[in-house]
Image (tube, rainbow, N blue to C red; front, side, top):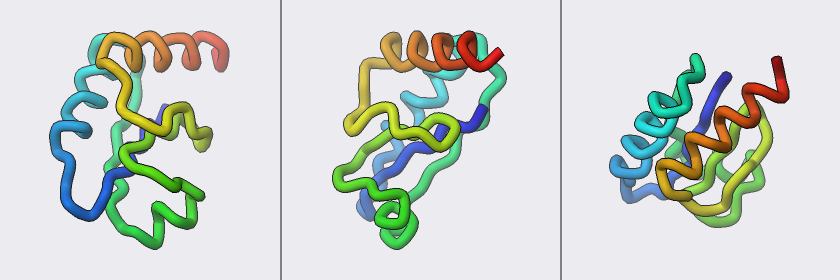
Length: 81
């Protein structure tokens, strides 16, 4: 599973850390990637950041609580297996 965190040009390391923590809590084998390049953000049709994309599907246009994101990751992984 790939979890992409789309962030604005001004950083947002906390958002990336939250996503990594959520993956750990979910127990799912997933890679967390940061996307900060504006061209890539626009190509993904992301209008606001931060945004979360899991396996090429935007699942949140904001940064959810770590526990909520962990549950979302686990739910998606369960549906895909």
